Length: 337
Image (tube, rainbow, N blue to C red; front, side):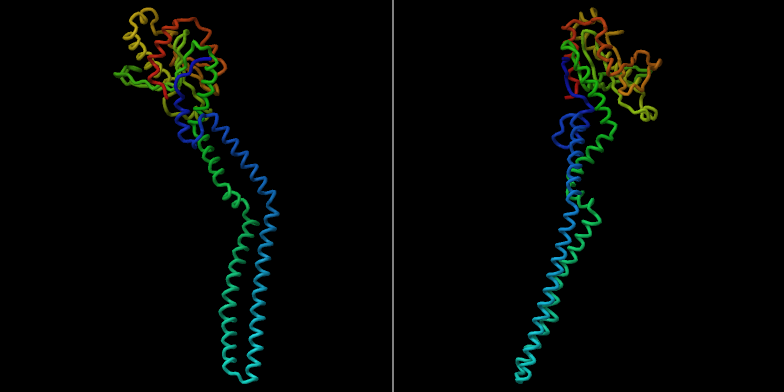
């Protein structure tokens, strides 16, 4: 198995947007499917239980209404009893008791009864609203109960809609394929190289740095790989640098840097194995096979996920193991950790 050094830049950036615990691009899709399955199970259970829950809420409302009627009847009976007492007291000319009875009747009829009945009425109104919610808005109740799970799904959905996610998926697919190469191959991920001075590109001195998705260092040479997981629509609407120019610029930065550093560190290497021609190869790899070769960038070659390993291994060896290690060591400080 090939030796992988560093981490894909796109994967690292997309994982920053993820919730804690997500460790890889693959886990984003896995978690998304898992959360959706959980939500569907909970939704099925919720709606299976819904008729019983509505009936239970209706029973609660009926109980409150019965309690209200009982309370009203209790007060009516109590007031009737006091009136009967007042009538007897009046016949017996117990005027003080008569006055006391009328005060009790006033208190029970206009203060105590309305106060207690009003409390029950509030409970009745609240329970009626609750029953209406269960009858008319069960989805809202379900969403409120499972807000955290729905929020996780929406968060991952937004991430998966991001073009960076598609890019990370594509790069991970290529990396998984490259990892099948044997251990004489080193795969460096997410290089970001800046030169000491500006260099000329396209007739102008305007190039100093570049980012690279993947760089394969092997006995077969150095391969700088640019992965594009673009939809056909995005490919047509792209207003930035073309993928061909982007890779061509990155390849030149890598070539200039390696040439200068290898000459400094291994004087004989530059003489034995110059970094020109097929020894440094620029490979554009469109995941959806929707980017074609461009004659304006004749050194930018096109390959695919299924063919990339054969594309590399079918070449003649140009470096020995010592040279491969030296190039890998030169480039390793620029990988994404």
